[in-house]
Image 1 (cartoon, rainbow, N blue to C red):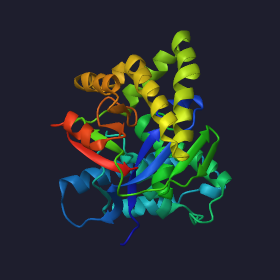
Image 2: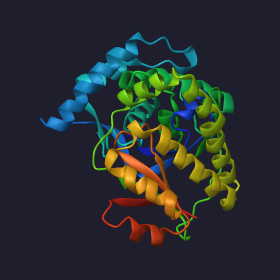
Image 3: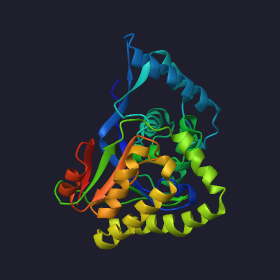
Length: 308
């Protein structure tokens, strides 16, 4: 059984904000990937994945999906009985789309109406996002559908609002003094508790006000200047975004990273932000001078994902 690979993703901008209709920008992350396979061995990891797929299939059977996006759940269950599992090295709870890749793989193989990524329209992207949100809600309780969508499409996507998604060009280079990088916190985060904290915060009128008037504005301005490769306003807004997160998303930032988070802002060497829902996993960093940042963050497990 040879199936396509589904890569991890990085949501550069839009964490939590896209719930409140902000823009988002997401990129494929090919360091990690997953694919559906069959196993004839009594392997504990394969067995655990197979059992998880059984529960997911039962859940999918209860979903009322649009005709255009219906799934052949009977075939899925039949393959699970034959020992199918999801072979993945995407770390779970790290904000890089482990469940999104699985949802994308299942949809690719078992959707009754096959869609070619080249032929997918802007409206299809919006509709797919809703379908993927329903499917991924099995894992997180609530899902925007963005993670599976980026894993499925494997191209940069611009989320313009809750109901509008489009393909976007992002120029990549292996060179450049500046970088987008990841710091491994060394522990997984759990999406649902972090999202619940966010929704509790939304009940506070002052938080809602600052989210809409500051966070979403900084977030959207960062995306626009990043896509235009206009780095001066980009880093100016990024600093504001990082500081806002430090002050308002403290429960989502692992406590041992609060100090280096503030250090980046104080020295203007680098700026950190959440990668996904936070609470652990990866932390996302941006710098105009990666060499200086590397020295300042010596001892931390880092990985460059984008150069500029």
